Amino acid sequence: MVQPAVEDGLALVGLSKSGLAGAPPAPSVRAEMVRQELQAAVQVCPRLAALVPDHVLADPASAGPADAARIAAAAEALLPEAGRNNGLSVSWGWRRHGPRVIAMLAIALEDPAIRDRCKYFGWMATRDPDGAPDLRLNFARIMRAKGEIPASIPPPAALMDSPGAEDPKWQAIDAQLQRIVRQGAYGSWFGRIGFHGIDAGVLTLSTLSGLAADRIKRDFVPAILEACEAAGENVQRVMITLRRQT
Image (spheres, rainbow, N blue to C red):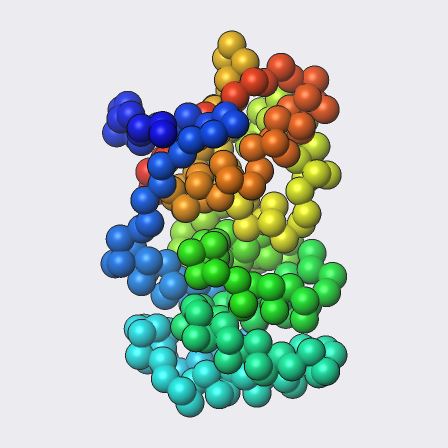
């Protein structure tokens, strides 16, 4: 097992073919993440805004069965293909994720990159809670695509800043990565990735959460290595750093 080292206040995790230790966020951090997700959801998707009471936006834990029922009815009305039982997907999602399912529905309705909205929503709502990404990344991408960043959503720099995004080496690798990784997964896990160079065959990237680092290690290291090779970069190992959010 790879043990994290601490360097300049950052937890460093080495990734290659194996090994990553990631810790889940503290409950207070997660609660704030969910609150920010819901605030982003109602601004990105006005069709849902009237269905989410102020008390739920202020404290998502205060949401109850009546709130779940409203969102289930909205899913039936707003998503296509009623035969897919979209309302039932909300019920499953609520049991697994609580009010985060509201944000998932908003993404399914508003993300221009999603081709099959019902399938995407069902996939998000029924997945393992531990595998659900930080949905603020999806909202940042949606806002970028729409050319609008509401001021009341967490600061644009905090949402969208990606160190090294303009580096030509990373742009070449990233272009290949987007070709290899499907759109929804790319937006969820690579939307805020940082690039910190390639040295002696080691590619150093950064994320803002251990969850994202763990998911990238588990599912996407081969894709990253393939993208590097396609971009003409000799990379044998991937290093992930956990960077502070400013």
